Length: 138
Image 1 (cartoon, helix red, strand yellow):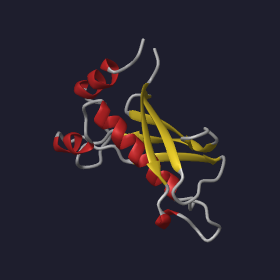
Image 2: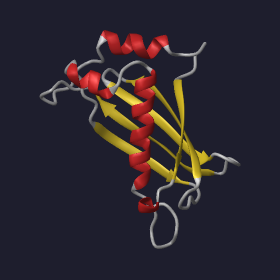
Image 3: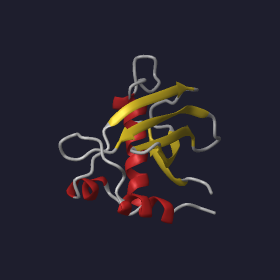
Image 4: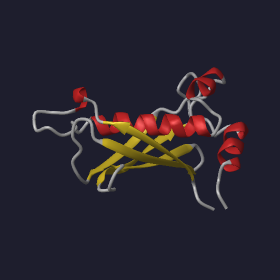
């Protein structure tokens, strides 16, 4: 089985660039968040619906590899995938490439703990596991 995957295209905004004319390094984590959010939406679990059910996914670890440049108005493609890790964590893998010709820009992952409203760790609810596994490709 492969992980659930979602692809999003976006353009580098002027506000995301630095004096060297490329994207500013911290923007990648913001892009990762967009990829994760759209992946969850594809699973039928918009983050707002999860919060309404009392489940939160705070970030507990992040890793980024910077592989290339992206400049203002470049069209990028972000592929995000997710799987459960351990008893109460979600791991989201992300890779960002140029949409036109594919050179890599960045890749990495974020790990999120499942918590309740009080920030106490909880196991992934059955409805989350069902949504995740119902979208896995054979």
